[in-house]
Image 1: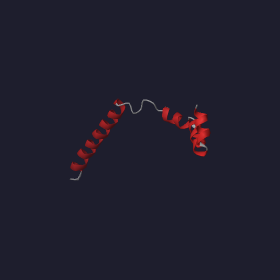
Image 2: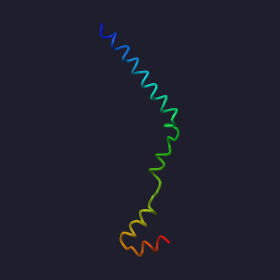
Image 3: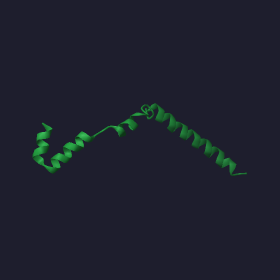
Image 4: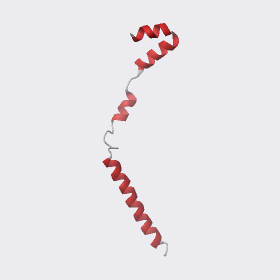
Length: 67
């Protein structure tokens, strides 16, 4: 029973710390753009990969393709 005198204040302190961290994350804009990272994964970066592969295979062809 004496342990409750320790555990209850510790749990209340932990709740306040978690609430403060959550409030900080809301105020700093952590949840502003929830869909952007998902769309960035799907964006196609093939053009830069093609140029990079061409210049690695044939430096002259890569230079001509960049112009």
